[in-house]
Length: 452
Image (tube, rainbow, N blue to C red; front, top):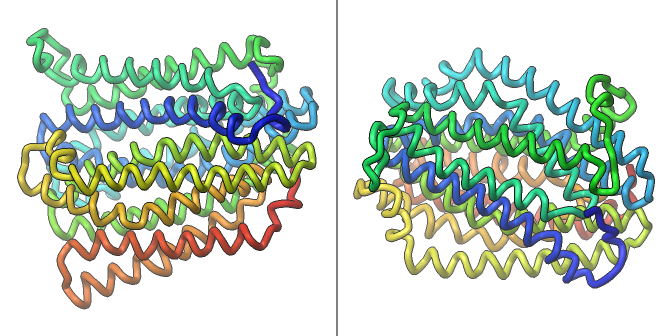
């Protein structure tokens, strides 16, 4: 059910909003890890192909982020003001406009996928990336629409429904993966479809499509205290669409800058060979799992901030951010301890290649040193999407990756010719700078007076 987040215990509401979201996203990342586990049974080249595609593919996430972040403030603040009509309209336009933008993005991406992948790897790795990637690109509008449905539900205070949908989607994905990938399903010796890495992509789009349809039905059924109109999906409202483009534009630029920087970082990593790329890919998925509780806290917390600011309860919004920051940092510290103790064992679950294990465990250990800074910045930064003041995200990404990490990589690799260990350490320097920028904008306080 929809929920008023402008009163009651902040910590309790933060947990109630964040835990279901965290669980849902954790199941998504568990699927990603299982996906890499099955793909690792094909070859380390297959892992590298998927890793390179995923890094490049998420550049287009900037489009989703612009509209998605804008929708957080639009939906949550209108709902906080108890304006159900505008809440419905914001939901309709978020889904419709994001689908339209994703369609354009998928067409553009399909034309340039192959030449982009060829920058990073040899023909074998590139072919794996293409076999997996074209299917994912084609279904980009469905993926974006599924994100929109879940975001809308969270921002009216219903975090359990998206959690259940994401868990169902992840379980379905895990089941379909081995059935579609292998000729004979491992461990049970039952015949499968033998589609190889293409099967992994098909499993993903099937589960995403089912998740979207379930969420769409629930959101539009009127059972959550709101009732968007299906008819409203077939016409664009420029007044709202302009806000969807502009409110989250700084955040979208931040994501674009971040993902482009990750693509350039991947180029530096690819200089060291396929084993390093594979280790980086596996470790990156594990870092992604660690970030899911932080994402849940961010989404749950930003909904509380948005509703609180909509109700002009600034103190409540500020307290929510501080509690969120302490919680995210504590969770990250637990993850770091586990990584320091078991890094090689963790990477060994996904590949038996000694070099992949070596480089992946190195990245886990040294790359995690900067997570404490990022986690605190992530927690305190919930005030930015909740208020609609998203400019800080752009400077956080621009400063940490483009002004710090990438110049350091050029220095370490191209000029000083240092080993790959210094690639992992470059993440720490970038994370520290991102923390400094986030704290500057938080302390500046402009977010307290921003409304949409």
